[in-house]
Amino acid sequence: MKYVTIIDIARELGISKSTVSRALSGDTHNVKSETMKKIIDTAHRMGYQRNEQAVNLRQQHTKTVGIIIPDAMTPFFMTFIQHAQKELKKRGYQTIVTVANEDYEAEYEYLMMLTQSRVDGILMSVCHKDKNIEAYQQVMNRGIPIVFFDRTVEGLDASQVRMDDEIMSYFMVETLIRMGKRHIIHLAGPSYVIPAVNRHIGYRQALEKFHLPYDERYVLEGGLKFHEGAQAMQNFLAQGLEFDAVFCFTETTMVGAKNVLQNMHYRIPEDVAICTVSGTELCTFVHPTISAVEQPLKQMAIEASRLLTQQIEDPESPRENIVLRGEIVLRESTK
Image (cartoon, helix red, strand yellow):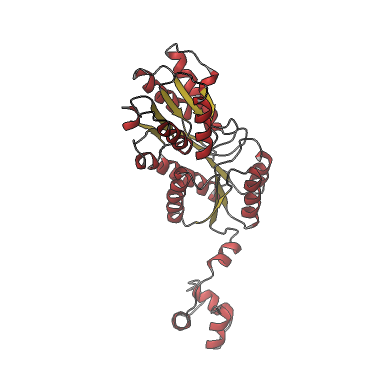
C-alpha cells in the first residue's frame, strides 16, 4: 500500500514541500489563506494522513507505553490491562502489551525489546522481586520511567502502586477465626513475589492475635498456577491433619485446591471454608462462590497510568508509593 506524502501533494500542486508542510501544520503566519485552503483540500482529496509516529519521534516521544505482566491466565492482570489501556488512551498514549509467563528471563527480553522500540515508559508487574533489578535500573537510567504495580520491587527510586496485602490478609484470616475456624491452611505463594510474602505475614499476625499456634505444616507451597494449588492440597491431605479452612494466596491456585477438596467429597463450607486474596469475577463463576479480598483494580490501573504519564511528561516529578485498600467480599464458601 502506497501512502500519500507531503512530496506527493507538493508535486500535485507545483509548490514546495516546505509550504505544504507549513500549511498542514496550521502555520497561518507563513502560508496565505488561499494557498492553505488549496493544500488542505488537495490533501483530503488524495487521502493524505499525517504520520503521527514520525512527528512524535521528532519531538523525542513515541506516545507509546509498554506493559509487562507475568501471566495472562489470571483474570487480575487482564482486567488491569483493560483499565490501563482505557486510561492511557485518554491521555494520548498507545500500548504494547507483553506477557512473560512467569519467566524472569523472558521478562528481561521484553524489557529490552520495549526499550529498543523507544517506548516512553513502562508499566510492569514483575516475575521475581530480585532477578532483574539491575535491568530495571538501566532502563530508568536511559530516561524511560517504570511504574511497578501489584508485584513490586524494593530498593529502586520508582513509583509503585499496590494493595495493602498484609493488612487485608490479616482481616480475611481474622474473619475466618471469628467464624470459629481454628485449623486454617495457608495456600501460600512463592517467596520471590512480594505480595505472597506480605499475605503470609498477615496470616501469621491474625493467628498471633487470637493466640492460635503457627504450624508450618499448615503453610503449603501453592505456587502460582492451577495445577500447583491442586498438588499442594493433595500433598496436605495425605498427611491426615485436621483442618477447617483454607486461606489462599490467589484465586488461580485456590481453584486447583478447591477442585481437589470437592473431588474428595469435602463439603464447602460445611466441612471446610475457603477464601482467597486477589479475587476477581472468577470467584463468582464457580460453585460455591468464593469469599475473597478484591483489589481495587480500576483504581490501581488509573493511578499507575497517571504516575507513568506524569513522569514521562515531567521527569523531575516526585516518585510515589501508593498503597490501596482492598475489600473483603463474603460469599457462599465461608457462610
